[in-house]
Amino acid sequence: MKLILCVEDERSVLENNRKAFADAGYGVLTAETLAQARQRLSEQTPDGIVLDIMLPDGLGLELLTELREQGSKIPVILLTAWDKPYDVARGLRAGANDYLSKPFDYEVLLARVEAMFRNVEQMPDVIEKGNLTLQMTSMIALQDGVDMLLTQKEFALLLLFARNEGKTLSTEYIYEQVWGHSMNEDPNAVKLQVSRLRTKTEGSGYAILAVRGTGYRFEVRPATKIRKL
Ligand code: CA
Image 1 (tube, rainbow, N blue to C red):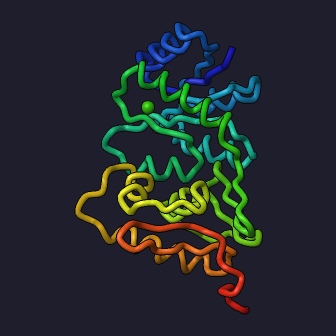
Image 2: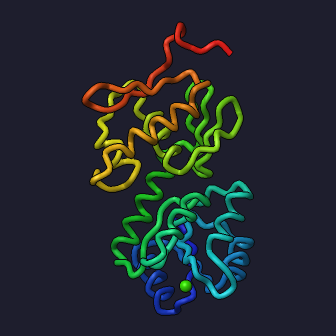
Image 3: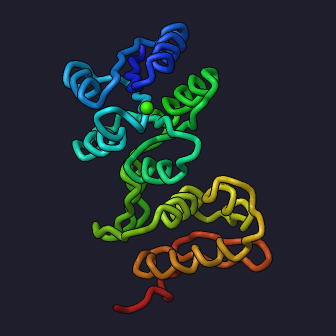
């Protein structure tokens, strides 16, 4: 039985979360504050955490950051207020696996948690491509062991390329995957991000080729074209 820690200060939401998970066959721990959550985590190691951001004694992001700094890979879904999109970006950068905006449907929460467990089981925490290392949990990319200081979008783009090495990806597909919605009035956004990522991956053994009229392809740079340092 998988154990979920629900951290939530709104009693009714917490009780509904607890009931939804218990009915679905999960073991449930609850906490209403960061302090209680830390206490629970010192006693038991849950398989996943559903973490509210606004808590009486601080931000859920603090707990998330602490966990990731300690090397914990416990998957975390953040519960965010619908009108705080900035929290989502911060949360994902801090190592959240997913997020859900309040108010949410409990079926969706359960489905997200199931998907999160599937992804965690399937996804390696680290992808290595030549001298590039992509660390999923921290969303950090290293080249020859040095942090490439990629932005969130650049990381998402490099990850997409790394997972599709040698395949031509259409600009529309890239946009959907990296931006999370279909391409609107911003056709140059992909070009700009690719251009920045190219500069940052200059010293890697990989090239991002433009495929005319289609999109881009990530592939091993031909030996003759590796720049001499
Ligand atoms: Ca709250």
